[in-house]
Image (tube, rainbow, N blue to C red):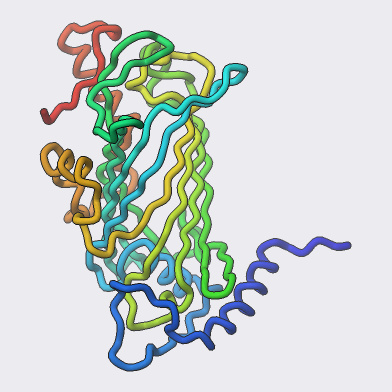
Length: 326
């Protein structure tokens, strides 16, 4: 039997299910989403059209009208070591805040975003400041993931980095947009220069996303920010603060993100208290546009901290990470 092209199959499935979704109207809209006083109007979004597909994605990730949208994502981090097994290392809780701006001159949406992911004690739920590494038997300071800024440009121009339409699936009133990001590039932290903190000369990782929302919300023109649950997983090498060197193994992150329609009040108290005290900027979206190429992530931030320590005359083994704002 001849196998159908997967994209054509999903387009066929999506169109058929979208037509079925039209009959549902606004049934199933969740509390907290903007509603009209009258029956919701259905805008005939063509999810195979690049511009409409992009609008659907923005409704799920942020808010089309430019208001801030906040997401909270609880999860776990595991160590995955060949021949040895798997070990739960941390619970996690992350916060991301986004807003969008349409730029006619760029034919693109500017996506302003910053995010924090904090490592938590699996038993107490406390935000960790240090961690006992059972392999090295060394207490190290924890460097939380603080990505600022993580802006994106959703361009509708042909050949742009994020090419629309994104693949999607529809099942009843559920719509799912997926993206898988695989990276294999030179490591900014050469293991010859950072033997404790870097595993390999190449940085190899994957991040797997699935954004799940309501088709009737996405298609409702009175809803600018749809409820969304995002599944996120990442497989990567050891984090620099763990000081695992080139030991075999990987870390596996697994989280689900929920759009926090009521804002910071929905963040767990321990996480919210830590952010309010030490990194309050992560409770709001960036105000200034920074090109995506200038984003700050855990690896270039870790390198900067280590280099600052070394400039003070401290050897690599004497440089456990320290939170710079305390």
